Length: 316
Image (cartoon, rainbow, N blue to C red; front, side, top):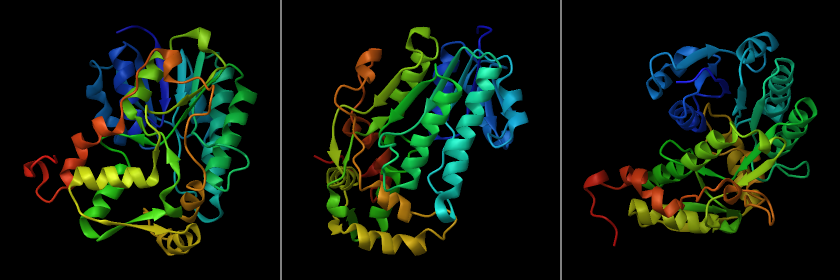
């Protein structure tokens, strides 16, 4: 274990836990920040004794952010939300204001490396408030910390994901799966472990300062093709029914009132744009990483949604 310190905002989330594991393997001492650090205690065994330290910090609080980055050699900001509340104001607060606060504190503390995780499709012209706030966050980070590295992943998959798992679970209880917008939206699903490997590589390479990387898997899949993969892996016979965007949005309004909504109107708007790597963009190839395909990984965890779980015969 080295004396290098990295502060990770959003460490206890889906992406965060995999990045913490990769950084611990590389010998970093890790401050795993959370508003409720007791929820990050499960990260401790990912490193040696004392290597991973849960740390109380809130990106909405300037003093706690400053304390979290003090003395750090690198900072990684993964903080993000998928539900923006009424009017989407929480998107702006977390993705733009919070990101700016972390970047400014890192610059003031003399941090050498800052990695900010955004998203593919983050543009000021997007119909989705989520995507617009992510784009604004990138601008705010660059204004405060011009040398920051920006990562834009496509839809992330892995054992704890909220995309393949959500539809796999839905296939257990319904006779049909919706193809929002007809199922034509394109994705480039990216394995969470590959993103973690990219972060671990970038955080120690000063020559990458100021760069932007678009991270997508080896295949471009439409929404329909993803649903077909899910029903194949879960071995469920389900109808795939096209659902126009306007109809999906009408259905999403009441669903968005739930504490953990399965679908929100803003997510419907997000599906109006593709989530694929742009031609000529830097990606995994520039880092020497060969990404895993969804079809190679997804069966390793979606089997639990088969009728008899791991005891179901493998699909031919």
